[in-house]
Image (cartoon, rainbow, N blue to C red; front, side, top):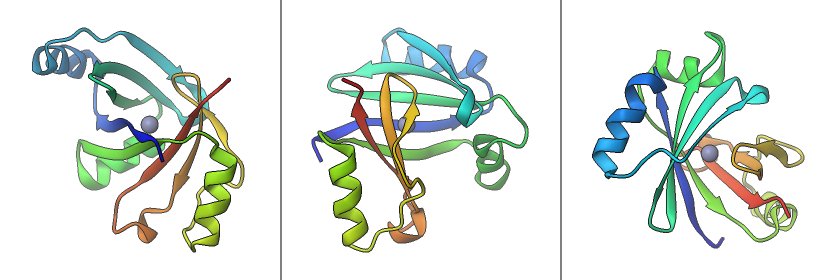
Length: 133
Ligand code: ZN
């Protein structure tokens, strides 16, 4: 894996969280994007070579809404950038990790993504992401 591409944080309301993170990081949110397939609104901040992705549910039954119901707001996933997502998925599958997606899917920020089941990673939801070329 190349680097930590971003850290995903589940929030109740971007309206409150964007200004808070702008003030925390001393940088402006450079992009918001709705990802319909995941039922989330996302907001991105650059921090050096890494990004912070805020995730707000657009649906009370969405994965982020359910995460917040269970655990409250907070860190939701860590995303690692990979050069070849299909190859990395095959490698991790062979290593015995459980992938939550059979094939890469289109995520926010012009990426192909795949998630690993947190039960196999000591409770951390791991996202693999590859820039769509
Ligand atoms: Zn992410």
